[in-house]
Image (cartoon, rainbow, N blue to C red; front, side, top):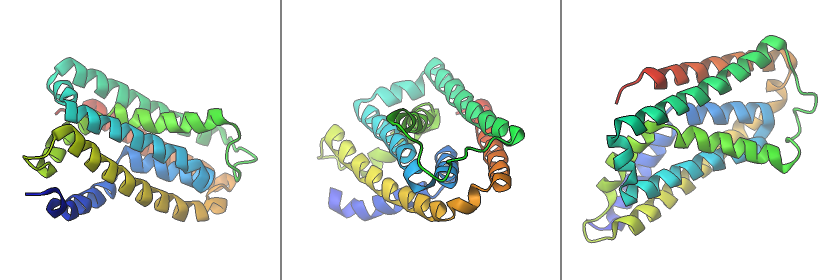
Length: 211
């Protein structure tokens, strides 16, 4: 087995995995609907930065230790679930109060809002213990026996990150084109309520899920 021969299978697997619904997809859709394409960019980059960190940790064996440790797994699960619940209740609060940002059609000003969106994406990815388990099972299937584990995993992870950035930004662009409709006061309140419900559901599922 050589790297080039397994690359098409790897790419197909990444595309299918990227299309799966989950916290990352929910976060991107909400951000793109409310803040447009440019507002979703830092969220996507934050998610993918978190994914790449997990991949590198998997290559060093740290991810395996995290997945094997009951305490580490529990801490990540609690933090991840708590953060999703926080985002969900925050969206619900906006919906119930009927809060509408007047300049919602424009990207949020300032670098602090960009980094806040980036941080949300990174935390959602890094605090998901299922990603640790996934990395352990996924990448070794595509690393040839005669290739260095760390370098090959880092390369494959870079390919995955590039593919997911393209796919998620394309999705954000499509959703963002309908942004003016999403940002109407009544529609926005409904969207906040729905996205809040989805995020809370995902948070509760993460909280009660076992390995």
